[in-house]
Length: 387
Ligand code: ADP
Ligand code: MG
Image: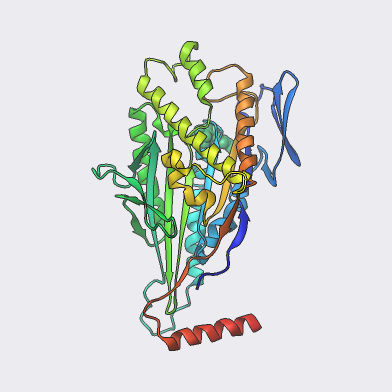
């Protein structure tokens, strides 16, 4: 019962966070277009459908991605990710103070699933829940995957191919927890992220150097159909460039990138490798299959895991986070590099908004459905179309 595929662009929402230091000059101007003043008379201008300036609320951002999130209840896979330099507001956007995209999406999802269920007639025992929702949470640090819901597990996580026909991937060894409502889901997520923060403090704040990936699997079953979908909510690592890190490690007084911390530096380079792999995948996809038939998904764990979210059967939204002023909140480097980071985020966002995906609903006939049930369902669908 596969539905016809629909072409869908990656939706890009640019979010510019407010300046903390109001005495600094603004470098980013939001209007119909976005302008970045890079100094020395250099300017970057980009056109985006959704530009949210510093006054935008968490609700404003969520509203831009809500339809993508809610289509998962109809069997459409979805992915929402936050991209940008460290300090640009990715974690604030995805999680915030329990008011970011993740909590809002979980609440809205369960509300929608609840309202989709037919009411149980009075005086009958309630029917078993028609929708099953489970969550998994992992981080990618360097090229390594870690299960945040089962941190002590010894089983190594690996991205594997589930089917050669559909190219479907799965993560072997990853735990997943069935949740009954948004509150339970958020509890699980917050517990996993707390563990991430605690462990990362011991490892010198690995949280900004790792990608956090929340996976929500939804399965709805009735007499006739199984409707399945997967939602990824991703808080990417800081996208600051390797060159900035290298400059920094060589001579600046910054403690963050002290060259004696070889391991941390290596992790930075690995993170950068995964983000440049992400950039290369998005570039290849935006050029299209005629110009770039090979898409280098296999160049990093991140792109392999998100393969389907980037160029497969998934409706994807990217929140590109920029800093309003000409200042980097996380690293010490020449002033101009800060605006350059916003420009590099916007160039990534611009390529991403050109990527087209072919999406369709994942619906399958329940194997045990009888011919009579199928005939009734077909008649009902036809009647609905006629109305
Ligand atoms: P990132 O995850 O990109 O490294 P954070 O989300 O941790 O950055 O943001 C850095 C700091 O800036 C945090 O203290 C966060 O609360 C604050 N912040 C980020 N975006 C906004 C915003 N839009 N409005 C207010 N504060 C913000
Ligand atoms: Mg963060």
